[in-house]
Amino acid sequence: MSTQSASSAPQLTSPTEDDAARQYGAVLFFSDFDDPVTWGDALKENIPGLDFRVYPDVGNPDDIRHVLAWKPAPGFFEPFKNIAQVINLGAGIDLLVGRNDLPDVPISRLSDPGMIALMRSYVLFSVIRYARNIPEFEQAKRRREWQYIHPRPLHRIKVGVLGLGHLGGAVASGLAAAGFDVRGWDHADKTIDGVKTFGASKRDAFLSDVEILVNMMPHTKHTEKLIDKTVFDALPRGAKFVNASRGPVVDEPALVEALRSGHLGGATLDVFWVEPLPQDHPFWGMENVLITPHLASITVPEAAARDVAESIRRVSAGGEPLHRADTRRGY
Image (cartoon, rainbow, N blue to C red; front, side):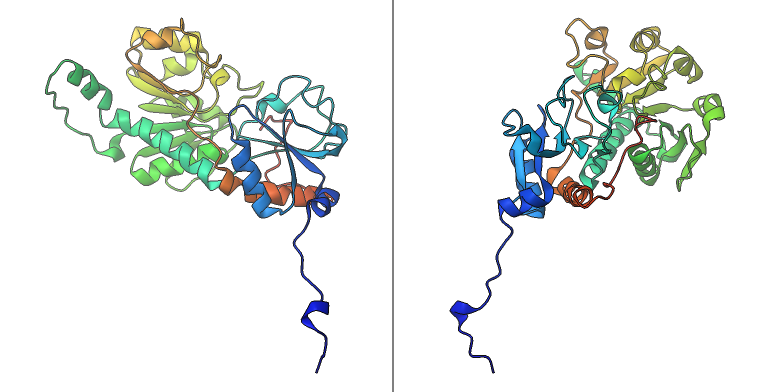
């Protein structure tokens, strides 16, 4: 039987900040849109003692090993010579590709259930708003007019999703689960339960009977202005358009013309070429356009921090991060 006193027994201690700094280095956070306090608290719950710094309070730039950033300006990365990875505080990495201030390190995108749920909810709202004739009822209300429009069964309403990647695939599945007739198009062949999919060569067949078109394509040099006059012309007259992905994927003058001509019956737009949207932009004056300020999907730190912490551990141990993006493809 041991006679060792409680006072002389080995004591278990929590990791100190010095321990975490030696193991992981410092994490630098930069975003004009996300809350650094919430992010810092969430990461420290997963890695106690983590050295979490918020730009511009960088401290010694040589300490920085991991960067969490959203829309860093050109030249942002130049002072940091020991970066091991960059984690983009969002899904699209287009502003991190082809930079001359960023060394060849892994770039990851966030992937958390909260982000997916928010995107799915935004698109469902937008599609259901058109499917249930809500814009017409909004106009009737302004006229003080009781206007009845007989509802159509959801399974007869054809919704098309352009882009079936991480978020686009989840959106298509969510629309199908809600009861819509969903079809999807992507450059690569995809298979999604409940969704009729079309490959790269079948774009016109995909568009020909879509009543509500949802853009979920990433922004790359290959997708810029991908949705142009030819796309809008291929849709049935009166079709609706939802853009919840990236503004530059859409040829805005072509969209304005399609809306003015009546070929498109309406649009719900969350993203634009220039943000905030300039006050003199034609979209503001269009009754058939709903504008939201780039909020279709935001990161939920409490959920995303688990993956970010795991990526910090993996890269610090010489491994690969979670959700690494393919910078050659741009997503």
